[in-house]
Image (tube, rainbow, N blue to C red; front, side, top):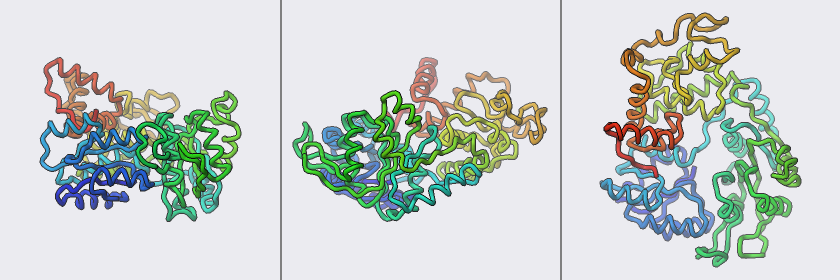
Length: 466
């Protein structure tokens, strides 16, 4: 993850940068927004910018928009009142971080706006064969196509291949083709020349040049518009690109990795994806198994996430109980590793004892993990303790009576409301973070909060999201 810090921040700049470095980020510092824009135009890319509230944040955000530079902006300041923070959000900042910097808060903000890759875990036999293949092809220059369901860790695998390659000392640049509008994606890839469109006040290098000597990841390449697919095909074939507004070719030196959660062969048959581009990308294909296909990795991943979120929230690490491990291995994990990560974030906050019990593991569709697994046909564990070999012999709820004592005699709506409000308070009013932890959409969360407000219930003030 690459962090750009813009402004002086009266000495706190070094503290914020140090925290980011400790979290594995690469940090560059710019004195003001003009210097920051110059760095971005010249290929010194960033995944997120932390900008001093004293800088003209609205001007900076507008300049990024006009020059088709996709970069989330986080505002930060010392002793700033709520009105100033809200103004920064209204001007386009994604988040607001008060200073002096708090390590956990900065880590949470950076993770929220960048969704950086996590550690590679592959204990299950199905995953070990995938890792062996990745190890074999990593040192080559071959283009790699990584496929698999959403949330299976395709970007993590891409980063793994880069770190095992001859280009490991070069940059690893990731571009999410699905998250960027078509009108901006071409400039992000190939760059542009001054005056090539309204707002292009200077030449700007694209991701192909920014990734020079390293690896360029085209995440969810199947979402790319067919017209842009043709330009990408030419760049791969000729090993050169042309910036928007210029016909002179520029030589490129990148190793290309692409990912897709679609069946690209089907997309080719439907005319949604170019066949010639598919063959160019699919020199080596690595299919990542769904989490339900690699049960041996479920518990290690869950424990990794539990430790991560315990540290971020300043609480002691909590282990999974034996019952929880059994239930987690039996659950289908439709959202794969991403769903598991969010589930463990909630579990760490819900668990009252040293161990995480099934009753603590709340699922996005509502209810605990144990009840969901018990209701799924073919799954061994059951809350009744009456199912097959290896299943828990006692009701999971009785393993942790303290966690449910306060719920007895209350309605589900009351418990749900308390959990939502407490989570929102824990996230300092940030609706986006709270929705992620609760495993619901931001729209669902806001609808719930509007209901509570109409009932006269106090809701933590909004901060850090739009």
